[in-house]
Length: 249
Ligand SMILES: Cc1cc2nc3c(=O)[nH]c(=O)nc-3n(C[C@H](O)[C@H](O)[C@H](O)COP(=O)(O)OP(=O)(O)OC[C@H]3O[C@@H](n4cnc5c(N)ncnc54)[C@H](O)[C@@H]3O)c2cc1C
Image (cartoon, rainbow, N blue to C red; front, side, top):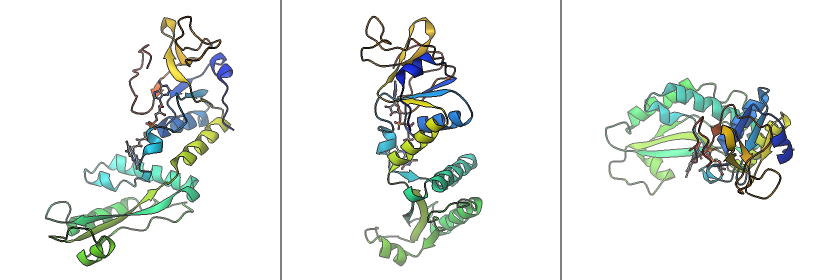
């Protein structure tokens, strides 16, 4: 059950307030709760209703980061994707991706072949413990095989196609809400239709714009309880709050 209890949220001291219940905010809340922190998640709208709902729903496997040899990010992607595949096998599926290859640069078949082999070698444990359909290995197709799969590809100079598999999560809201359930089961509180406001004296809390016992005299939102904000974490494109700033957003 997602515990939504504004009274309790303002009357209880928290180690952490997470602002914004997109996928990052929910994941932070879950991790914090699992580590034993008292955490409250504040969302001004619907849980997961902003960018996380509007994304392309792809769980990237890290291939793109090999272009720049950004190996830390590559490994992060592999591990994170595996986490989602392990925990939500019924909500993910392999997603074939095809890139027509032309020219003599990075996008020629020989280079792409090396990239795909590196990708497979470096992520050889990417499907460990994954019960769902595991994404197959990538490979380079001939020009004709590429056209068979993607007839609209421009033929002039076509040398082949790079085929690899990412993972798609068609229903990210279900995943996000499930993670939020886990976070609440681990002790987190979550409030939607609340927005983070500023309070006097440099203390900040979660508030709303509706009338109620937590309303400031001027009508702006704030919490009057003992919510302590040790480390503000703001998710999403609205990341305008800096640590130590008392400005409302
Ligand atoms: C078009 C598009 C497609 C994408 N496709 C992919 C993809 O396929 N794969 C992938 O991995 N990534 C993709 N991304 C990136 C990915 O969607 C984002 O990185 C991710 O969803 C961002 O999550 P978030 O939690 O940071 O932000 P959000 O999901 O936007 O959540 C932020 C939340 O903060 C809330 N909020 C803001 N201010 C306040 C406040 N003052 N008080 C309370 N709440 C507040 C908002 O209401 C919102 O719900 C895509 C991005 C875009 C734009």
